[in-house]
Image 1 (cartoon, rainbow, N blue to C red):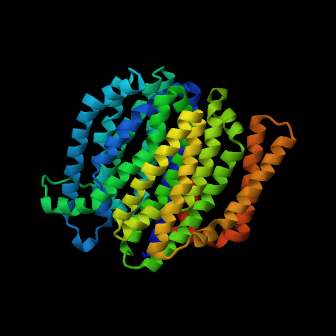
Image 2 (tube, helix red, strand yellow; image 1 turned 45 degrees about the vertical axis):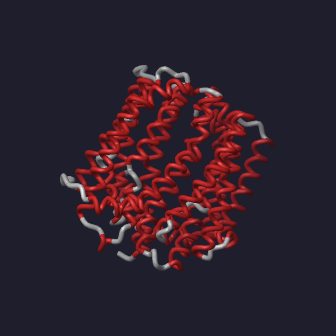
Image 3 (cartoon, rainbow, N blue to C red; image 1 turned 135 degrees about the vertical axis):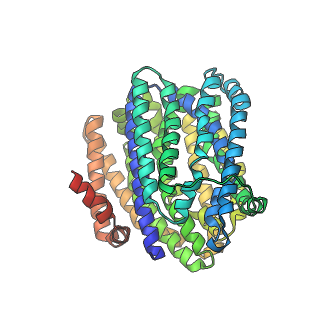
Amino acid sequence: MKLNNKIASGIGWASLSTFGTQGIRLIFKLILAKLLLPEHYGIIGMATVFTSFVNMVSELGLNAALIQKKKNNLYPAYFDTAFWSNLTISVFGYGIIYLAVAPFAAWFYKEDILTDLIPVIGLSVVLNSFYVMPKVMLSREMDFKPQAVIEIAASLSSGVAAIVLAYMGYGVWALAFNGILTSIISIFLYYLKVRWIPKFRFDMAAFKDLFGFGSKVLIESVFSFFTLNIDYILIGKLIGGAALGAYTLAFILTNTFMKQVVNILNNVLYPAYSTLQDDIRKIAYYYLRLAKINNLFMAPIMTVFFVLADSVIAVGFGQEWSNTVFPLRALSLAVIVSSIGGSSSIVMRSVGRPDLSMKLNMFCTTFSTVPAVVIGATTYGINGAALGILADRLVRFGFYQHQIKKLTGITVMNLFGQVAGTLAMCTLIGLLIHYIDHAFAMSPLVTLLMGISLTMILYGLYVYLFERKILYKVIKIARIKERILVPLFNLL
């Protein structure tokens, strides 16, 4: 299969995986929000900040190194070495979670339940290391169909379990066991597909080779972690669990959703870019095209969240979540900024410059993210934290695009030329919805339905008139019609 076809096919299946998974999770979160309180989400947010960090560090950047490595320099011992390295660090990391992290988090946030909750959630750190290698193998081959099936099945099963537990009155524990069950199901299904069993061997030369690249990815990931979680840490500490729960919901609806969409592109593009690491012109071409596709999907969704934040929260979650409205609006704008240059760090890694991406992330986290969120959170609470994130994303965009220009020759004007039409159309749609909302007295449900309907109609018309060529190309090359739509219609 040609690289163009592999990229488009990968995006098709990765999109099905992400949107299917996120759609299922969103439905379950809507149900769980009716059964649980903002405080429950806040406590989970406090716990997952610490366990996610250990989970990220346990990979040591070896997985990214395996995907980036050229095929003729990659041997079976590399996968065995990476597996045992990940597992060893994961087990060691869980010991730290149990003995040190959980007591510290309980003291830091003054929430005694974290002493028992964090060790349970932390089990996923060890479990996840068992299916990473099969997933890496599939990603290297750009085979994203089985990953889509596995991730949707795991999300569906764990979501049902979480709802049952919530109905039974388990509260925050319903959310905790959700992650564990997702990991267990993923292990079984990934090994059923790949049928790879690691051999008991460790090659020090292979480890040094992988870690030479992976260490830079790891350092960047550490700073990326703090970039994405400093607001959670500060809000939970300075304002409390209820505020963190409200902020978490806004983050789930915007940044988490954007992150999944960007991950679709990055998971597909990273192995693709890595095969083109000596051809900067082609990387530049794909970077611009994927920036366009990314914004084409993200901008209208974030427009609805920004304009109709009141109705989204009132209808979907209830008035007890009203503190989420302003953060939802601010983070929606931040997502639109981030979506335009979402794969810039992947370009740097793919051309063998993970050090550049690492240094940029370190600089921006230290001198942009932390100050912006600290000042915002301490001055204006969760609203200020959200505004701090928006300011940080604008600063990051400028620094990253400056380096992308040096690597590929792509200017900011080249990038905005790809997304100008989409942004202009979304602005017009947003203004129209805002006018109608204020001109007529409607219930939140009617307002939400009106806004979504207008966005679908007007944006669909725009895409048909001006963007249908690129949309048809993705559909055709990815064979979305034959693989997804036709079977779906037959099933219905």
